[in-house]
Length: 151
Length: 434
Image 1 (cartoon, rainbow over the protein chains, first blue to last red):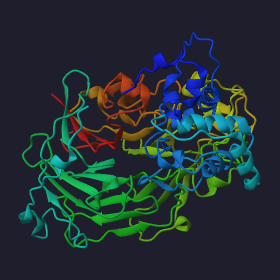
Image 2: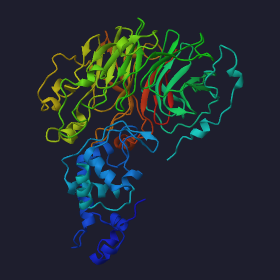
Image 3: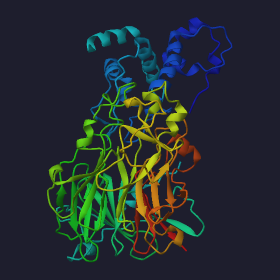
Image 4: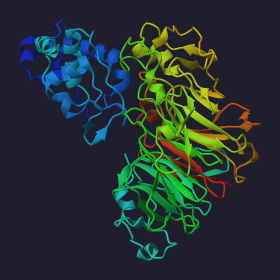
């Protein structure tokens, strides 16, 4: 069930910034006629969606639910859990075919060594706050520090 | 949304009488909990569309991941499961009162898998690494004390394309698909821009069909023959008794757009390459991973991982498909129809169960149906047509890929009816003609 938070769109930015992240996550619909500057969170979500469409959608699908036995869904604990682990999976891929919620998925998650820190920041923030997920945004500094440890 | 209540199917009437007697339908003695079940008919949650005068009944339901299927001349229906049902992985079903619905079920076996085939009084069944066989009683049941004999062992299974689909010829040979554990043999599987390994090292032990003896125990790779190579993954395969040759359906490669975004659009990705039907002879090479078949250009195209640009042709040493179908629809079942129940046009033609696509996104998904290809003189003699549709539960489910049922296995019954399995909910349909 989707709640329409359109009425929140025009609230002043100082209130917006004080609203818990999950509310904002559902508020920003297109067609914002106010001259309110997008929050960093919203910028990250919008840019993350673009990255998702380009890099992730073909396997994990538009609804983020993946394909049974082939590509895993993204509405799972690992996605809302440890950010370092997630950042590592994006950069290095994963080919361990580990069990996830009692299922094993066939396909390899490819490595993305050339993906920019900003793109990882955005796409993970998007994934962690879409498909029914609600989790903290990912910061670019977290991506940078994780990447340096991976090397 | 209505869900079939699997528990209903599992409200069992234990038919202990059927467990007694050497010729009775009874479980493997090692599987002491083997269940003889009284199936309760369930309401179908989808309605299949079929040509005029054809009718489909839900023969069985709630089997779990029902993969391939094979039927004895006496009408015992064996279904291979890729999931555990009460700890068992082969279901034996029988319609005792002839109403088109199974009313007895025995589950046995302890290895999950896809392949199953009855031949010369034996039931062959595969896990993802092995092929076993059970000697059947003369009435088609599995003897109580029978342990499966391991025929083939140690086949590669590395997560991707692991199903070992099987079929047999009339000369004492069994054919096993060993799928490539890769999409296109890139240095890094499915990674954007990663080039192909040349020669592709996967092909020595996978990416083809292997031939083994049907009656020799414990065969390994060393005992088998690589019958045909250059096949990325085959799930649907059948021995065509009119041509006396093996026919297979290849699952074509994925992700042309996401791996080579500058060369292929999302739309190209959804339409390329064709899902191909091949007729195989010993020594054939179908060309994977170096080429793919473009159904619009009707050409074998050099794969971009190997320097292709979507136009350059290649694969002069590779065979041509005998038929080509839309991309990514995942042909999981192939059956040459030899019965007389259906009209003459179906005789010796091919039924193909398309499991349905995932790799057409963001374009709408496709498949989730059974098609028919008419054959004449051992070749397709007309355009393929959709035979049974509606498994997904509607166009919206088809487009999103969220199908309620996905056709997987096909088999012909002794009366010329055909059976279709589904590996989402484990439904088995029986299709008849009047």
